[in-house]
Image (cartoon, rainbow over all chains, first blue to last red; front, side, top):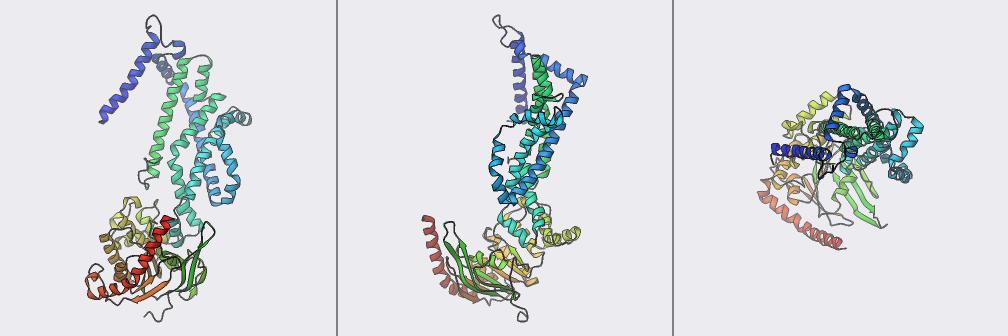
Length: 261
Length: 273
């Protein structure tokens, strides 16, 4: 399939979906509207809602808040994950002691923590960041832990025979290996940072994309809910494209960096 | 010339044992006596799994012998052997560093300024024939090219002893010969003590001053020691055609053959168990 055909087909899927949605929500079939506007709205309304958000500029504030929360969650979660991952991998005893608790916390669906975080950190940015951190931390932690553990013995022996001391092994062997594992899970961890932010906003906040969707839902504004969802997807896709670009730069030394997940 | 220098490597009664998962003790090498003089090229040949690499790891200081001693330039070895460079059988390059960075690292960790380290690494890459590949990452290089980088990585530190563990094992026959000649050329320019492990008797005779034969494991021993008097410089592809080479090969193979068969039988039994 050529690029052009592929693109045409991809666009076709969107067009057909939108047309069907518009038709079934506005034109009665046998005297009955199959997609009642109250529940399903229609593409034209959704689109005009999006246009309104952007033309009045309301949306920017919410996007900026969500982006800021995601970035904070990612940076703090990653830093924590790297630190603890390194620590556990280099100190097997510590890892063994904490192992059941790590598993326990990781097994917990993080959404249930949201109310507690709201209590602790208030309705502002930080309760959302905290939720995102709990998600990002574990992904980064597990990958860094693995990355440090999985350095091939030969490479390690080679470093030693070349005269590296522990600090130099850390810098030239363990660190790049751990980072490569972390980067290979960059899509997941960045995605979870956004999830944490949006879910947190949805459960209680005064700004952000999650808040926007929650508000629309509260007044049965289905067009607003759909509009929020579309903006959110576009937002996540843009971030993901950025991650792909960063990944390509950071993992040049890896064979088929993109194919690994 | 070698007489005035202390012996580079002297293993005396070196025994290496491992504790197996089921608690039994597996003796890999028993009572090995081996010496390598300064500037001497010694090849260790033996059947698969006989503990050749084990002996090399003892010399490198990566393994501690259960009994016996290892002396390096007449000093007992404790910890890693800082006089030795080790060329590993498996890929040991740092995959996240380019070829030139891989070579320069040995100097950088010693405190050589980066610009100087890179300049010297560049010269070493040229001398192993990879001047044009400095910016490549290991995965962009062929197996033979990676070995060349590894050779430069080891040699740039100018170790007094060079330990090589079947370094050309994974390469195809032609590349092996080219690498062998490259090794001899570099070694002739600056004679280091070399301990070269291989399972290929022909390769051993073609390269070395002395060929040491090990018996099949477990409890492998050194069972033979031949001086290879073939004239240097050698071309390892052509030297195989010569009469003296054949005579030596026949003589050593007579001893090695039985051990290879023993090793083969043991490996098939181990596989069945």
